[in-house]
Image (tube, rainbow, N blue to C red; front, top):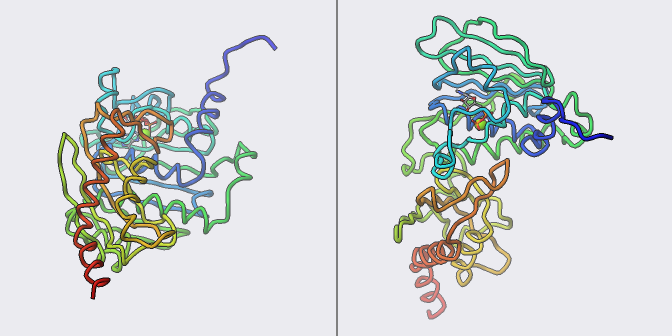
Length: 340
Ligand code: ADP
Ligand code: MG
């Protein structure tokens, strides 16, 4: 076969392979877009675990009608414009990939209205084929509808799991988002019934969101962490060792507000707990690490689950020392018990 340029739709479908693994990845990308647009309330309607329908409506800034086609074009973003912007990126999105990818593997529609627009507008995309912008009544903000995910990619559809499982993955992502943005109200419905509601307007450190997301038991066992040094700040909660887990299911790490997985930081936390926790048990934590954005590369993977630190060693030691110190009292308590 001669070398040829692939058509746009196929390029988007290939990109979708990395960005859109399952309904939960769609929910994550769309809610992140809503948060980037300044939304304080996000409604999430799901059908059949998100496979049949994901509808996300926000009260954010909205998109001007003439930009709707751009919003579903690849590498089109309002969030960065230069390499300098990328290095200091403060928004959750910046790659301009999510909407075109999602729209290429679903029946997709994007409706929006800005505060001052006379009316709202809508743009439909079917399996990557972009329609034309039409007027449509819409309150301030944006609604994205994703129907029949992977309807045109049978190979992918095959990998979708049972409704409950897919819903579980969605709820897990929402929990991670809810923990870091307690100021935002999130309402979820599934198959027409309200299934979850995180009330907004809460102070991150009031602990109310902790109860809503991880439960009373975690909140009661939580030790508040707050430490800053060398341009690094670590804050959040760790559960006392008495509240250990069989699995790593309650380990939330955020770097500059982005939920990530990081082996080195996870290792530092484990080390800090090493002498106060039974072997094989897992600590539970919600930790926010903040540092100058130029010290961390967020552009490591399309799904942005991972970051790369410029000084990983320093961060590892900072996290270890901070938590080791935070656990000092529990350590003293245990020593006392042993001595008695
Ligand atoms: P990215 O988030 O990386 O910029 P996306 O493909 O997710 O890329 O979105 C493309 C663009 O569409 C965004 O840069 C933004 O300008 C616009 N957009 C997407 N979703 C929303 C939303 N909910 N509210 C306002 N603007 C949005
Ligand atoms: Mg985005």
